[in-house]
Amino acid sequence: MSDALRLERKDQVLVITLDRPKANAIDAKTSRAMAAAFDDFQADPDLRVAILTGAGERIFSAGWDLGTAEDPDQDYGPGGFGGLMSRFDLEKPVIAAVNGACVAGGFEIALAADFMIAADNATFFLSEATLGLTVASSSVSRLCQRIPHALAVDMLYTGRRIDAAEALRHGLVSDVVAQPDLMPAAHALAERVIAAAPLSVAAMKQMVTKVGALTPEAAFELDEAGGLPAKARANDSEDAREGPRAFTEKRPPVWQGR
Image (cartoon, rainbow, N blue to C red; front, side, top):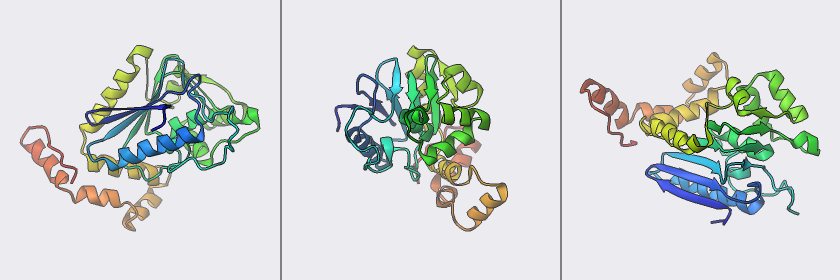
């Protein structure tokens, strides 16, 4: 594992901390280490949620390390840049705990997470156009689906910065907390996810990915064509019988993930 990455297991949660001073920028080696961490996260049946954050209190990640002599278009490892940007088949949720400046490729990685929680000192911006570079097409899609079009194009074309309060106002992040409360808030959110049935969460995540931007008719047609296998698996599981049974018996459900 790369020295730039710290991994910590807390029960069913994997905390991935990017620790690469001074700006938590990501080179190819770090990206491949992040890919390996997400590979292990997906493969481990005892892990339910990943939390991705940056070391320190100033910078979540500055994105691609512009100081490296490496080709920025080279192989980043499975899942694309940061191990997450093109990992469209990941069945488990990822929480981005944004502890400070969330810039360029760092912002794009956070956009690829299922949730973003921000410290109150966080800022978000895409600097690529001001450097003669471009943003990944998947990131443009994610950004335009999450915030108003006018704000998205302003951020993309000009590198406009928004603070945590504006990000919350426009629905880019789900919560803003004081810096010391960031990781506790991320863990509290993870525990709420863990309380739900794992196969149901996997199915919901697949549906968000595959039909979240479709019309209701197109979503229905994809489902009828068998394009949502995780949904069928969840509905035919033992957990689908355990949930109603536990509700009737007025007790917490015991999920088996099968």
